[in-house]
Image 1 (cartoon, one colour):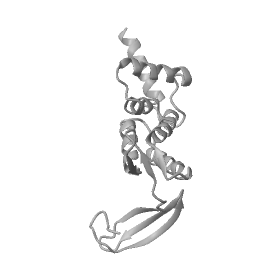
Image 2: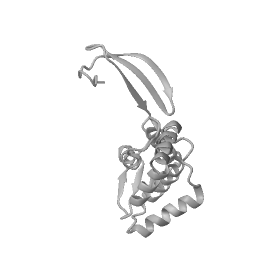
Image 3: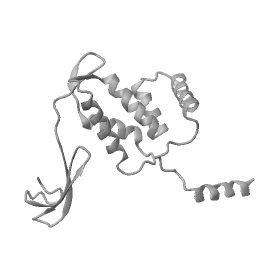
Image 4: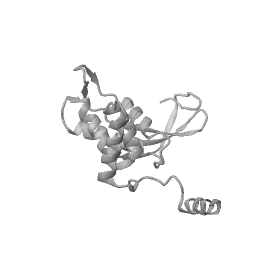
Length: 177
């Protein structure tokens, strides 16, 4: 294990804890004395994704993480939410016990989880995953979301503005009129 700060290969483990399906280790570099955290996960057997064009490629957690991060970019989500979401999806995929999973099944799982997490991230992901070809398809997806979920943001989502900031903005608008 290399220190992320100085590159030294010598470190000592200060603390170890079980987290989900792995182990979290707190380490201290023996070269620069900086502390850092590492995570160890059991590498499950190979899982292959069957793409739309029937190609097969090995499941890549980073690719899944990148797509979800892009959909959730600049959204008011608590720290660690996206990583936890990807961990849960990956665990679910391995629990299915299949050696090959269609990319559409993975996309459906992501869509389901994003719909619960953040409506804007859900629409962003859906626009790429469902390959919207025009504004009509996007509007239909938003209308469907509004019909089933209403306007309230998902329970775990942080507000964009605090209640106090909303009150101040409302007062300013009334003064202008």
